[in-house]
Amino acid sequence: MKLKLSAPIPAGLKPQPRRPGEKDPGAAGAAKEAGISAVDWLDERTSLSGAARWMMFRKVPKGTNWFYTLGSATMIAFLSQAVTGVFLAMYYRPSAAEAYESVRYITNEAFLGEFVRGMHKWGSTVMVILVFLHMGRTYFFGAYKYPRELNWVVGAVLLVLTMLMSFTGYLLPFDQKSYWATIVGVNINGTGPLVGPYLNDFLLAGPDFGATTLSRFYAIHMMLVPGLIAALIGAHLYLVAKLGTTAPPWLKAEKDPELRKESA
Ligand code: HEM
Image (cartoon, rainbow, N blue to C red; front, side):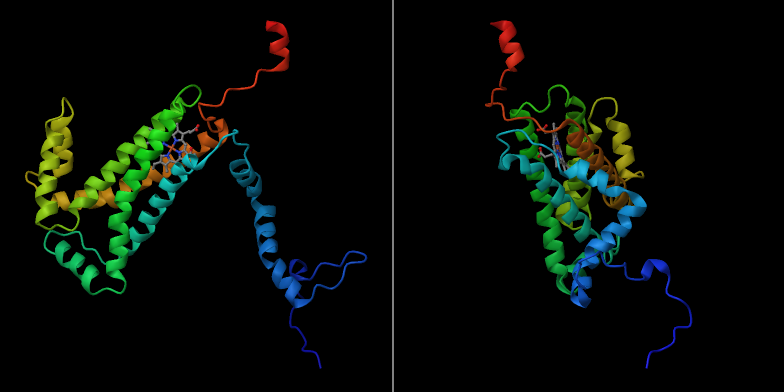
């Protein structure tokens, strides 16, 4: 006996009529199609597949090689830092009295805490190394030249922000090493021409190096800089997709047959 439905099934949820000659796919077939149907559903309402195709299905120059993966590798390192950082933030307490103890708790007691902290700590070094290697690749391949100057400048800002992440993150465990090393770092900033003293005041966030400085570093490390990095990576990738990537410098462009005729 069939159960009686209290309300009719909405048209969108009813199975589509089969095309002539098409076999019934059955439950397994429907399950296989579920992913595609979900993407179709989203695309029908947002048309985002066009943007995704524009971003990902691009022509790349002849000779593209492994060195071109360094930018994406930097981005993956950043994403890994963001994910592990969120988990660390669940346990970390940014107060002068509690920071050290909360980091000790993460390392020695929290479930997988040592692993997540290790990922974040080593990940920061990996990201810095990758960003420099990526910059070296774009420099030696001449990718800073017309029309990619703006993308180079965006990249340079990303480099500074990456260094700022390392600098502000270093203080957070609030142990002897991080405390004294950051005092040296802040003092060096203070000696900079013109903006130095203002930068010093901004970083200290008070008359002395102490509790307020830790809160300021935490806010910069957790919210300000990651937000800026994420936005600038978006702009950087937009420009990469719009302008395409540079061919390796050892490849010579083939001369257009028309031009060859003219110069002959
Ligand atoms: C968080 C840091 C960064 C991320 C996530 C990032 C990501 C990327 C990605 C994914 C690409 C395309 C693939 C590739 O060529 O590797 C790219 C290209 C490029 N990046 Fe970066 N990048 C970063 C920092 C930098 C820096 C520091 C510079 C230079 C100062 C830079 C300059 C460029 C340039 C000029 C291109 C175009 C390359 C070409 O036309 O061949 N990027 N970046």
